[in-house]
Length: 370
View 1: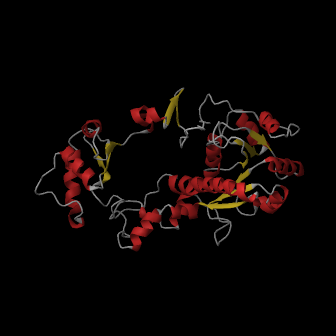
View 2 (view 1 turned 120 degrees about the horizontal axis):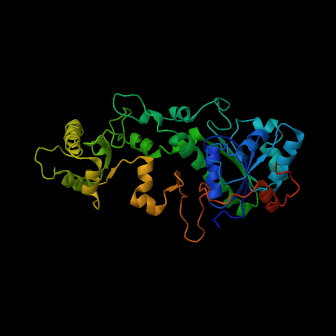
View 3 (view 1 turned 180 degrees about the vertical axis):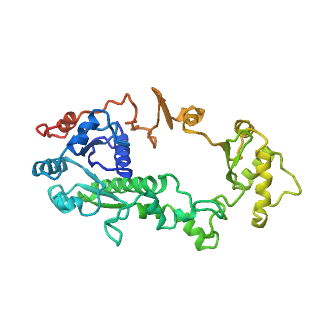
């Protein structure tokens, strides 16, 4: 049983960071019941699952009907956490806002996951990951010199700035509840969370160690010893040897140690020359040949693997970071616990409880599990 065993979560279905947050809570042992429109819930039971919703039961509820709203409130009465990702004001209009729910269940943690937050000029505006990280300096900082910014898939806004911060908020509120006996509202916004993830970059900029020009800094591909290089077979290796001892190990591996003509590591004016030297050497062997050269060293060089390759890598396989089963790849649970290990709700063999079983365990056997 995971560390959140005994915690009950009502998840109002959504997309992106909300479902992933519910997935993580379920991985950690929480009992999560997902509410969706009746037609969508039936489709899910037939196998048409939205992203990141496996491993937890779904209950069809028409929140626009009196009966549906009443059912949702009964679930709220029995829950520890409510997780929702609607635009501000939607649940209030349905009679399911925080004031109503916290009056009925004062111990409830009411977690709201949005892009822009519950207030501010853009609170009710539409948006996606890329939009949220556009306004806080994050997206502007990602990319190569002289080129357009590069969206980092949807890892930074949706999942880094969204999921991880709403889960942090939920867990913090649950801990605080042990002292106060009271729940509270958690207002998690992707624009806020992804800004906070930029803390180190903002600090570097404040002390003059970071330029607003993309691709000129030590962590944004500006430095030749922190970049991705193409190998002889067209595949790639990542080089991240920042510290002097790691840089020395890298130079030894590529055969450039002691070269009197090699520019100094931190001579920014000669970084283009240094990059050209590295690129030329790394292009002489295949990716896997370089991986073999640097295996067991502290040069901070690793092969850039595809998802299927990652699942087969000895370290990833040993950790269960990515798992392959029945031809399907999926990430394993994280983090790891020494005494109360989590579970992987994405595993095809995970015994997902039914809605009826969950309702009975919550003390609500008379609620229709349809």
